[in-house]
Image (tube, rainbow over all chains, first blue to last red; front, side, top):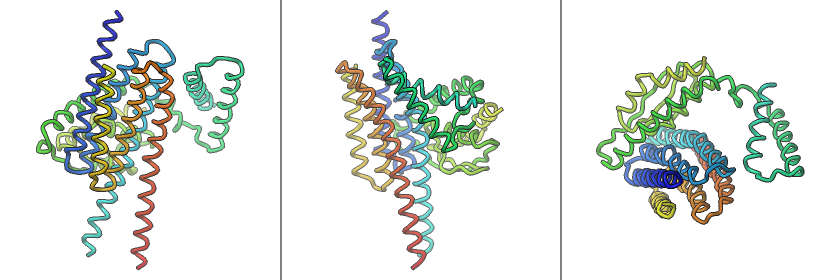
Amino acid sequence: MNDAIEFLSGALLLLGSFLIFTGALGVLRFPDTLSRMHAAGVTETLATTLLLMGLMLLAGWSLVLLKLIMILLFILFTSPTSSHALAKAVWRHQEHETKGGRHD
Amino acid sequence: MKHTVSISALLATIWLANSGHYTGLLLSFGVVSVALVVWVCHRMDVVDHESQPIHLTRHLPRYYSWLVVQIIISNIDVVKRIWLGSSTISPGTRRFPVGQKTDIGRVVYANSINLTPGTISVELSDSEVLVHGLTQANLNDLDAGEMSRRVDQLEK
Amino acid sequence: MLAVTTFTLLLVMAMAMVRGFAGPSIFDRVLAANLFGTKTVLLIAVLGFLFGRPEFLDIALLYALMNFISVIAILRYFEHTQKAEEGRSADE
């Protein structure tokens, strides 16, 4: 039973690592800021969830499990807010630039 | 009143989960700090149905289980495009009408758009949301209105 | 597996640094900083398990809070300085 849990947590950790690496690769590869944010989104939703779930399996039934759940919920609740704020700032900036261009 | 109870219960849970020491002295510190935070929240007038949306609780499990599936599907799609390279993406922005009547419905909708990789809500107003999509297919999926319909159901 | 995950996280943080230094716009740097911050939270949590010290999770939680606040604060700052500049250029 313990072996099965360890194997499952190892698999989750590996998959999460792969997704995080992919997200970072996307941040490096994609051509513009807003597209890069989609890549960053991959690391913030599914990859984080998988990694923390892998750790949860290692933690077993204890306070550590509750703390991991709190970290996960906090990241899941805040990441859309910060990416919305960032996207809005980028958009405002781009609009400002194009307006400035027409002005000249 | 029920919102005060729910915020107190939430704060108490957070305290108990983080402390790990259950002696009389520390528990009384916990009670004092929970009371202090609830009092400050009342002064700031943020204890209401918006900060504590308990009326949504009944419909939430169904919405979340649908959202998790969507997040996994769109993650796989974006991961595929990252490995295939920039030639497979066609970024674009589009405006969508927002049918949700309450602020909380609109915020849930915009946050769900952000949580699924491939779409980001850029600007949210009372009647419209501006969405940036990684591909036109992502924007078309959102245009089909499945997500909006499910948030509507959540509001009821 | 924990060692592999730690290594990947360090690699990803290095990649975020590359994006942060390469820019080109200020928002790319903020995005890189945000990515770096989220990965730091995960790294602290994984290291806690690797060293067998789950107390690290408290630090990870605190770092998650700080990361969110700092990103919002930086964006607010740039939004307002931009508005101030707009106002100044309109006056001229």
